[in-house]
Image (cartoon, rainbow, N blue to C red; front, top):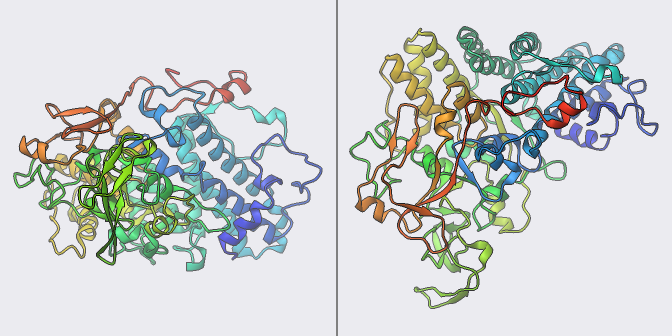
Length: 599
């Protein structure tokens, strides 16, 4: 088999031909290979397959899982990266860019999949039989993956499994989500019988039998088939090449985690071929732009080391809120006072300067562009007497006071130090931790709770505490309601910034609650006032964090000791549980493709 990154390079140089074609109408480019001249050799099948993977790899410059998580209650988007603000402010319409980009990218993948699957028979006689079947299976897997996202985002959508060859075939009405799900589940069952349990190490990023079964489990869970979700997850858990959780949670999302057994499917990147800008948009001003950042509500969702929400643990200290917390908090999010990208992260509005730290030693006092410094105002570092003139573009660069560590490629941030940054850090689509929690949730919802449910949840929790020196809080209850709350809390913190939250809050029916609220950032001058008031937010059974009675104010340049109010979220349950079908699709079909309710 050809390495997928090498094949992707070849595909990028051949984007004009059918297998890598974005527009279905450009069917007869006289200067490009066509279906009649292509699909003649095994190498050409590999190139066509790589074109399908390439469709999955990005939506604009930020991979789609991170954009999806910033359409939820997880985070705040400074600067409207990827157009997510329309999805959180109640302004989503059928002409918004984000609606069109996701639709176009995933349907491009469907078209490329159909092109390969419809034409590959031409090369069957000259292709290794085993590899021929694997190429077919990978094409089926990817098509199923594209449709899984399309149906979860838009509901009923046009469904085709054949290549478009004429204008008469171009326009078709929507097919019910249930029908599409049944079809792609059937395809994935076939895929799981053909592909190896895992791909060789040199083929990271390709589909596998474990990936097919994990995707079956996810789709079944999302669509309420708990029996299938459980059985498919069990096939991964009991696989002959069973995945295992990576020992260190924080390192999993760095270069150390590349190739880990836990990662069942990822988006692979390579300098010189294809990269992304997650580090740029998530990183602090010491290397990045801090545009996609976690909300205070997300920080407050991590339990204490006693396994309790912070409002239920009397040992939680609101003046020292980051102490004695689930280790995944500091593993996922850079918090004030922490060393990140070689600097102490200070968000106080009076933090004129901070320290550059290398090998644990403070080596240089530097201007802190992360503090609240009004444009043109001369300010003096009280420690050194150094005078700075603040740049207006840099004030309060993380309005929440926090940064995502996940996928943010800290070494690249340090190296580039604010210049245009591209990263090849892989992004994970399916992890073994998801399989374990899917299995647990399926059995909880089916009412078939046994020790295997507790084992699955505890395996995920135990890894979170590995090397922390703190015993993890073992789950022992078998009460269905309590386990439901626990597994939902686990999914929220385990998969933060990984693209699963939108579909979770929709299927649990809580989006209308968690998305109709004000997004908060940390207090501009730390937690001294919050602690003095002994204020603790309320967290309900759905994990919804509220701040009734909390001191708060709109974001301002200097700030005070209050929480920062950042954005009022709006969610209309009559329509926002689905995105609208792009208006261009409605218009092009002459109304044959009908719009979703409420748009």
